[in-house]
Image 1 (cartoon, one colour):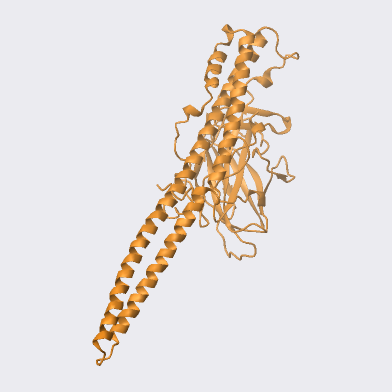
Image 2 (cartoon, one colour):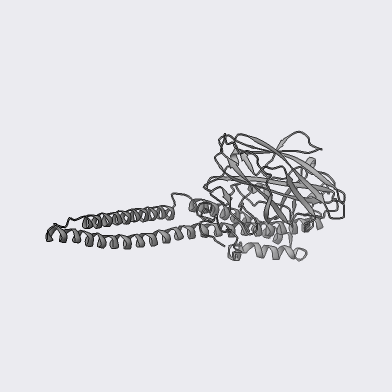
Length: 444
């Protein structure tokens, strides 16, 4: 599995070999805020702790979370800088590559000079003087020496170029790993904060300091969600190639194969794209809209990327979501991916959903392209479907859940999709990689 070049140009030299970006499982324990662990411990002993102690623990957990969010933002900024063309390692790699190209040109010139000298030597007339023959032979010998020197210089330049490219890739990979560590640390800090907040709220409720209206249900976290692979998500009609300046329609079907009624089912849809270089996101040039039987008016997909509840799904039943994707005419050629999944929340507080995101990759063709007959995009793999927040449709609430509810992370939404020459690079069995972070306030 290649990692090199996967990160270099959003990972461009791995066209022939499946590549992994951020597929490492970093030892990120050191990146976790130390205060978070003690806060969780204090929160778990809430009945024995005083309100004052729990308030201090909650404040410390909040600070640890704030620090983790700031560290994540800094790590993302550093990763973004590492992928810049102006990064020192990128500049050095380009210079070494140019030097290698110049050395190759010098070798070619030396080879031609030798050929010319040998032709002149062979073309000497029989009546040529010994001096003329000696001069021609010397020209050949000198050309051979020059060629040997040029080849040695080329070999040295090639080695330096390879080393510089490796160093550049290593710098980018290291920055990406640090960001992933910071992202995981933020998730841990958020869990610690939520545990500390709950412990404090529970303690206050026991002393009669809960909500005055007695409605504490909104503050109670949902029970742990479970993986439910039998709630399936299938995309139909998404073309495998979309021309810039056009709009395509397709659909998402969620089917309940669980054998039980699911009270509220939420479709999850995320669409991202990059240009051929793999370095320039095209998300701002994409527009995704949806409509359902319950909400027939077309609505834009928001940053949370959940669609309003489809309502209850009985065993064996399914529900469809109409979708349409518009690609701005200014979009350059590139590649994209649509991720889909389904989650549910029951009235008794149980929840769960698809353990993995289904991936459907497609190409973006420049405006004016005539692609001819285009087949539908096929599911190309899966990616982990992790915890997040689910909007409760018309209830106007946001339910924070643990378990499998989808989340693309925290902080600013900037995707990094691994592409190579317009071909999506594999993540395990999948064909694209999304490292996407959600607005901090979406995490509560």
